[in-house]
Image (cartoon, rainbow, N blue to C red; front, side, top):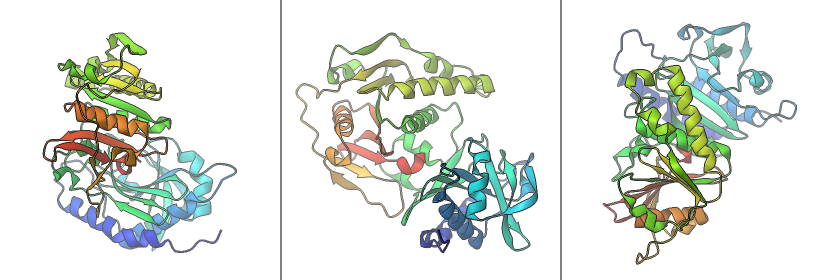
Length: 379
């Protein structure tokens, strides 16, 4: 394979740099909190180009998956430093990829004597650090570290071959934008680990990760009308409801900052996300009680079938479209749209096997179901 220019990388580099300039310029100065230096335009282009060609290589039979942070080594409190920095070349990156595949480990790259080099690895990143994730062959995600916990990143752009999607950080200003979408965008203010919306984000990420597709219905705990839109009896009803996640969310804020609590929360999220792989819908309350899974959705008696939904994607240049819900996917999408149409206090999260992810919520302004395509935010 001959390495050459990657036009999509060059096309998006300026927009990525502009994003970081805006955020660093508008950031509040916190004592003792490091802010990453602004990346130069050429470095962004070189990083994206190297990541793209690396994604198309193979090391033995493995596809490289790498996270590369663009910051100097001195900005990491505990860097793992190479005696001789590595060239930012696809064959070099593919060879070292197995060492940094685990979550939270990044290669560090910065310019030295005019050349962009890989100086080592790190787990700790400064606020507003640019991170490039090589997610799959031809699939790259440019992210911004938001500070605080190492998992808090906001997606800035997604490049898939010659397709470029730049996340619209103003998408939360759309009418009836769900709070879940606000948290996924992560631009207003980073959600705390224990924030209720952030838990739904973790559920969405975990649902997408198992790759089997799934449907999660979030229903109001104090409004039993959702029962009118479910086929009874439920094949996998829980008695009593599984309440570990709900109980964890009721713990004092100080406890929620502890690693033991965070680990317990992760396990509870993975358990609930895991049952969404079973055919049918998973039901949880807005307080995170798991009620059932494998449920079948039925149109509420007297309610018309849903004919149209508004669909949007939070990317720059995107425009709302009105479509039949079947155009968004298969039975899961149609069922989710019908459920939200009939139960307007509910929210439906739908993961497709191909990686697409859609949030369905009722829009009072539009008087119809609004489908938010958010897979760009979950990569």
